[in-house]
Image 1 (cartoon, rainbow, N blue to C red):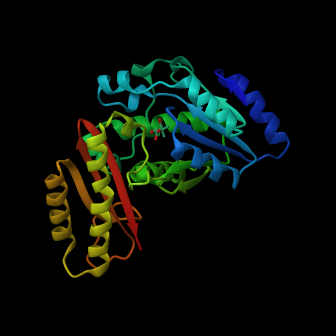
Image 2: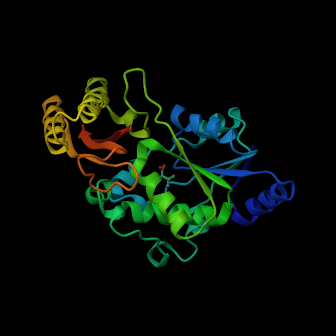
Amino acid sequence: MDVINDKSEAQILLDEQRRKNSKIILIPTMGNLHDGHLSLIELAREHADYVVVSIFINPTQFTDNKDFDNYPRTLESDIEKLSLANVSLLFLPDCSCIYPYGIDHAAKVIIPEMSNDLCGKVRPGHFEGVTSIVLRLFNIIKPDFSIFGQKDFQQKLLIEWMTTDLSLGINIIGAPIIREDNGLAMSSRNQHLSSTAKLTAAKLYETLIEASGSIRDRKIGFASIQRETEERLIGYGFFVDYISIRSSIDLSIPDKDAKKLIILASVIIEDVRLIDNIIIG
Ligand code: PAF
């Protein structure tokens, strides 16, 4: 595995691959890699010959400086995992490589409405930071494909939106959510949970499964399902940012006969924000 910090050096290797007609796939990450990330690498191999993983803890998507400072930095073990997984290139830029004019003078990608809904409402500015960094990475690596996990469903949808809207010509692949044995969706944040909170956290998925059953049954309306689900989550001890049934096509509010749906939740336990979702239909 090549480990490269400099964008021009990375581009020399990537151009070489293009000359050989290799398909290039990019998996953007912020490091602290777990089995969920490793599953993205496996999926990547089904689509492309040359797998690039980037690790960059992007300051502009953090809405809280403390959160940025506390973000786990585990570079040594990340490099070990990636080289065992036979990744072709680890791109490890620093802030001046990504934001040459500095963060305060950086160009931004803003997708109105969808960026400010759901997770964007509870973390204002977060998605602006995400779309902006992903476009920068796309422009440096120029991949044929890129992969985003379905756990961050709104993020994945925004990246697809940006890719289509700006005609980037990159295929975006959605990867299934990887869960712990108890159902908790894998996330770098899980390590901040105490063992008691981990048990409670598993109730999130259990509750979403029950709610998705009620959505399929259609015996009660979406508003009642949302209210009951929220009450149940509060009863378990979660603070609920939101619980929402939406169209899985564009996250709009669905009418009662809509078929392609998703139930999404963001909750907080022990100061740790957890998100999860289930796609229905
Ligand atoms: O999902 C993440 O880890 C980040 O939001 C991403 C896509 C790597 C952008 O920094």
